[in-house]
Length: 212
Image 1 (cartoon, one colour):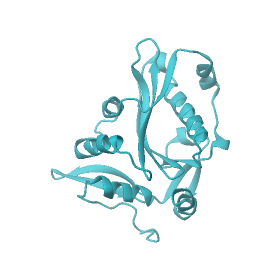
Image 2 (cartoon, helix red, strand yellow; image 1 turned 45 degrees about the vertical axis):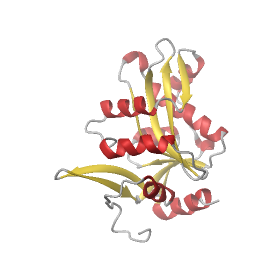
Image 3 (cartoon, one colour; image 1 turned 120 degrees about the horizontal axis):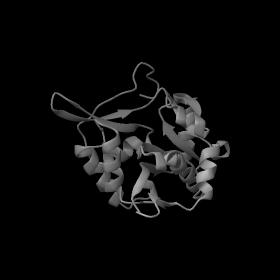
Image 4 (cartoon, one colour; image 1 turned 30 degrees about the horizontal axis):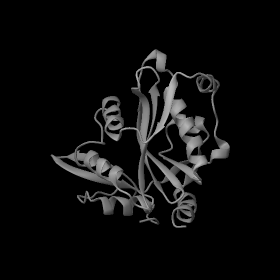
């Protein structure tokens, strides 16, 4: 599959945690899709990847201002149910639903050495409500983003970017080698400092960082 340059999407009806983790550790990012009332998991081994090396982290001026105020709380492993709710509200239709949502909740509760699902969130300090957040997983020394959200209100402008910056700093602190941001077409990833790697280049780094 790695060498098949004509194919990048696959499908499966296997919704098990073990299979999902095997795919994740092999470099596949899995989403979901409903077709003719059948719910599929769609693993993808991408043609290229956006990777952030923490030395390349770029912090925009507006985010630097937010970092200096104390109007927010940054939290790792905030309620995964609330994070997924936020994702579903912002991204409609959402692929993080049905059996996929159930699996996320199962994975979040698991204690494994080779895979850890985590969340990151920015909370409004006054209300303690999540205004930006994401879910992703750690395999070896790499963190991979799955999906996230940020509330589209003026007072929370750039809080999504703030969450990304604080998460990057956290990942560097805990010894991650790099951040796998997945698809390359979203400008915010490049603005954050990510660089684009071909599948071959990505897998070389991935395998050495995941299979330590």
